[in-house]
Structures are given as C-alpha cells and as structure tokens.
Amino acid sequence: MFYPVDAFGPIEGSLAIRKGRIVYLGPEDAGKRLIGPKTKKVDLLGRAVTPGLIDAHSHLLGLGRDLSQVDLRGAATFDEVVRRVRAAAAKTPAGLWVRGRGWDQNLWPGQAFPEHAALTAAVPDHPVWLTRVDGHAALLNAKALALVGLTDDSKDPSGGRYLRDAAGHLSGVLVDNAMDVHPSDPAANPFAARPEELQAALVAAGKECVALGLTTVTDMGVDAEAVAAYQALRERKALPLRAALFLTDEPALLQSWFERGPLLDKDEARLTVRGVKLYADGALGSRGAALIEPYADDPGNMGLLTSSQDHMADIVRRAVASGFQVGIHAIGDRGNLVALDALEQGLARHSSNRTQAPSDPRCRIEHAQVMRVQDIQRMARLGIIASMQPTHATSDMPWAPARVGERRLAGAYAWRKVLNASGRLALGSDFPVESPDPRLGLYAAITRQDLKGNPPGGWLPSEKLTRVEALRGFTIDAARSLFLDDQVGTLTVGKRADLVVWGRDPMSIPEIEIPQAEIDFTYVDGERVFARAGVR
Ligand SMILES: [Zn+2]
Image 1 (cartoon, rainbow, N blue to C red):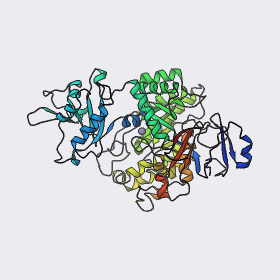
Image 2 (cartoon, rainbow, N blue to C red):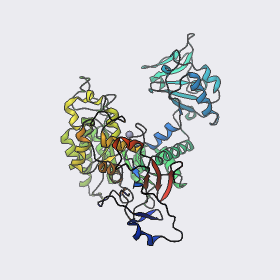
Image 3 (tube, rainbow, N blue to C red):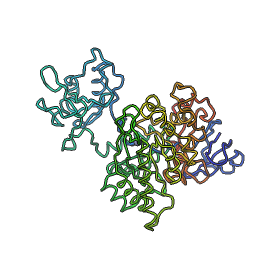
Image 4 (cartoon, protein in one colour):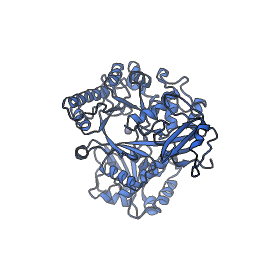
C-alpha cells in the first residue's frame, strides 16, 4: 500500500524510479510497460510505503557530536566508566580529546563523587572530559586538567566549584560554572573539533537518521565550521540524506551569506543553506521562556527575552531581501508575541522597499509552544509557518501545566488550533534534545500520550492530530517549510524518490504499536540507503 500524501489518497500498485526520480505510481499492470532489461524489480510484498520522513527542526551535528561521545549511562561502577573510556581512547589518536557523558555516581557502591587517579592511570595520553548525567558536573583526567590550566591553587569561580580530595588536591570534578573553561589554545578546548571530526559526526548521525526513516533533516543554527563540514561532505557525495541548514545569528556569518545569497543545490537538493535561526526567548523547563504574565509556579518570574524585537526585525528584513527565510525560536507567549511583532515589522519594511521581494518568504516560528489563542490566528494571517515538535509535548506534559497554569494551556502545544488556523503544520523532533526517531513524533502527535499510553485519552486531547495530518507534518508540510516541496514530501511523479518501506503499516496498526513499526528500507534519490538486518 502506497501512501503518497497527495490529494488522491492511498493506492495499491507499483512505483517506478528512474534516475532518482519517481516516474510512475499506479496500478501494477499499467506500470509493467516501464520494465526494461536493466530494470531492478523489488517485490515489496504489500508493505506500506510512505514518502521519506522529514524533520523540520533538528540539529544533525549535535546528534553526531552526541554519538561521538562515550556513552557512560548505566555504568554501575567507576571501574566500568574507566573501562569504557579506555576502550574509546584506544581508537583515538593520542593527544585528542576523548569525551563522554552520562555517568552517575548514585549508581555506584558508596555513591561518592569520583576522583581522577584511576582514570588518569588508565588513560594518560588523551585529555578526557566526562559530563555527568545531568550536565551539571564533569570529570577530567590529569592531562585535561593541565590543558585547561587548572591546578591545586585554582580558586573556585563564582557559581562553580572544583571538588578536592582530603589533602586539598583537585579531584578532577568540576561543578556548574567551573565547567566554563576557555583555553586560548584550540587544541586545549574540550569542545572544539577538527574538520574531519565534524564530518565523521555528520556521517554517523546521517546513518542513524536514515535507519529511522528520515530522508531530510535540518540543522537549526550552524556556524561557519559546520557549514564547511557539510559542504565538504556534499562535494564527496558522502552525506547519506538531505540536509537543510539554518545559520546561527552571528553578524559576520550572516553578512557574508546575505552577500552571496542562499545555497540551493537545485540539481540534487542534497544540501540547502537558505535559513537563519534566531532566538526570541529561552525554554520552559528552566523558566527562561518569556511569558506575558508571571510563571504560575514562580510569581516573580516572567522569563527572559534573548533578542530585541528590532534586532530580529532587522535580520528578517535583510534575510528575506537576500533570498533567505528566518526561523525564530519562541517558547513562551511573550516570546511568540515578540517574534510575531518582529516578523511583521521585518516583512513589512521589506515589501515597501521594492527589491525582488519573494511573495512567499516562508518565515517560521520554531516551537510555537505556548501562545495566546489570538496570536495563533495572527500567525496564520501573517503566513508564518509553525514548526512544532510533538515529543516536546509528551516530554513536558508532567510539569508544563504547573509552569503556565490552567488558563494558558488553551494555547499550549496547540497543534490542532495551529493547523486549523494555518492549514499546515511542519513537524520535527528537535533532536538530539529529543530522540531523532520520527515514529515517536508520529505517535505523540496522534495520541498525546507517553509510550505506555498515559494519560488515558491523551493530554489536552482536543489538540491531537489524525494519522494523515501527522504524516503530512513529517512529510509535505515539513518539506514546504524548507522550500523543498517541489522536490520531496509526496510520492508524486517527477519528485525525488525518497521513501520508506515499513515492516508494519503505521497508518493502520494500533496506535500504541506505532513506535515499534519496523523501518525495513529507506530510499534517498531512489537509492537504498538503509535495509533492516535480515529483511528482503
Ligand atoms: Zn532546536
């Protein structure tokens, strides 16, 4: 069964691909005339086929950099942590940083914070940086402490601490602001990466994504080094899927791109650079999202605006005049209000100055998480695309009501209201903040439940999407939000052959099974880039 996500609905039959594009979708008999001596035939045995899935808001490099770290979650002893790090160091040239994350001393006998001696003895030649499971502490070995310039004489910074052993020596554990190390030598910087490390991270992340059925991803907020890594991979044809990049808000970077114009890759649409990412406010969990009235659980606090309206309007005006679109991160109702004001201001100034104004700039609000209902209507009137993440709702539902209070929930994670107002809704995951797995996004969009089916009926159930709407959000509506809808997003003759062959049909199995529906094959440009082990 093919789900083309077009006006005509599901269709039984066959699909033909030539030179990476769909050339036929229809009844099997009529398609047979296309079969030639060189045609490769694949019997899909009646399996479900959808367009390749698209993540409208993600961070591919962030996922890659996470994957390149040693996974220390679940380590039951400090010895186990040391063992895993030593194994990773053995595969890393001496002198390069080995990073890991996820240790938790509460799982270990005695539950004491670790000291670096055993780690230093096991891994003497690589600097090591191991982030605690909550991100609020890191353990360094001796080589790393020396590189970042810490000694027993170092004084605790404000808001941070260097833990010490009984004799007063550094234990290697840095807490909170003590982790803000700024070595002048780039080789001493635990967070810097060489170009080949960036490229390897992108390839690893891309492979992870195609195994999950993703064929187009985004990277929201990239710097010049990241763009260069993407371009190098693009030239070597080493990127396993499509990527659309949004530049980070950095004056020199934006100036140079506005001068040269967007990278459209019209021939193959593998790498697109035509977006700019801005931030209106922070996040709800840490009460950094800007609200019009105080937090319900923190009456003195209204959150933080992180960019001025004038700054954002100026970037919108220049970006759109240069052929770019803008995506503004906005979580709180005030963040969203200011983002809309900035977009209206920037787009209005633009249309009055008579440059070749694209009539359809496709600017976006990222997250659009808590909005006043009237602002949802206004967003639609202004033609602003909402880019939302279903799993954010199911991750946040245990505590979000306490933050925003009952009344503001009317416009919180309000996919249904947004879709009804705008007619379109671009969906994504914000990976690696959430899992990159789009099946979890589809499931969350359809159920508004956690993976165990709670709460019964779903959280704020009137905002649920249908399966068809959720699939549109992860295909054609996401493609449109990236100006890629003429290339991908539906199974339409003439479009690029990006598709997913499912082991179980996500459009008909019980909702609770959607997260486990197998991805059997993933195709990008008609090429099979993923096949599930043992499946033919
Ligand atoms: Zn993000």
